[in-house]
Amino acid sequence: MVRRLLAVLLLLATSCGGRPFAEGSSRDLTIITRLPSNAPEILLLRAIVERTAIRIDDEAAYAVRLAQPEDAGAYRARHVVLVGYGGKEAVPRPFRKLYALWESSGAASAREPFVFTPDLWLRGQTAGIVWTETRDAWVPAVSAAQNRLFHALDRATFAAVRTRLRALPRDASAEQDLADALGLSIHVPSGMRVLIDRDHRAALLLEEGPPARLLRLRVLSGAPPADAHAARESLARLFRPDERTLALEEPLLSPDVMVGATRQLHGRWEDGAVSAAGPYRYYELTRGAMRLQVDLAVFAPGRPKLPYLRELHAIAETITPAGGRGADRASRP
Image (cartoon, rainbow, N blue to C red; front, top):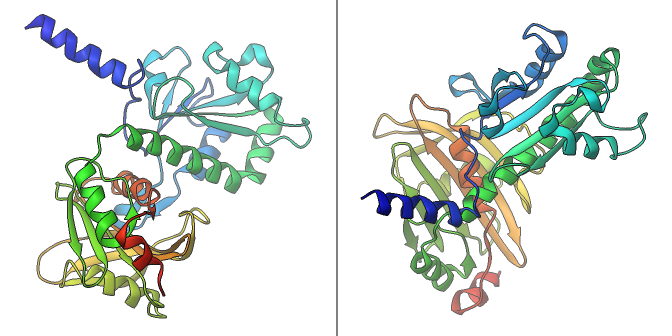
């Protein structure tokens, strides 16, 4: 029995490239610093990264934890950011590569006070440094760059989510069905149900949960409705006839969040027949000559929704036109 367990653990380790995945969800942000929790630098950084991402439950973009450089467990977190100031000697050894990357990113007078990079130590992980040469320079520099800092962290977060998605086993049969029916290629993780509506050239990728995750898409043969709420609702109701798209709109924290998006809407849906509601992300995309509607929806009562939306987003980003019978049909206006 012990030998079998060791064999399974070895297989898991080698399948991950010999390294484990980082721990936690894509909302978890660990700040490693020697500054006290009430220092102006820490309070400013928390205000930047804990901005509201989903108004439902007042969900922040990141949930922050503070740790000391000697905390070994902190380096296994999904997102790890070093915060401080000074020269190389003030940087904990695990961050020396990041410090060198920050130092070489430009002249001191024009350098951003941050650098983020995916997968520095573990798979599916983001590491960053928010640093200045002196403490007096830290707050002014970070205040001036706060939106750029947030968007850089956001891009690094999605890079880590994509890394984890690529490691998941895939349902080749479902992917082939979608290619034949709709003329598109998409990464379908094993375990997701796939429903195809050939008459409307639409499909639903569903993980019933809980939490429930829905990715709906439709290949367009003409222009969608001019009203974005009506366009989104027409797609959603193909598979959930009682679903309503509410007038509430969520903030768009990141510009051009989906590659190829020509229109996007973040908001809230609810079901008119059962007690269910949650956030959605709706996009109209171009992929080559193909035009699509894509809707991401989550039902996760009592849980953070953003990590599940990020996972669906990473799947949607894999959509490309595919060869075969459906490709010619999908590209026709």
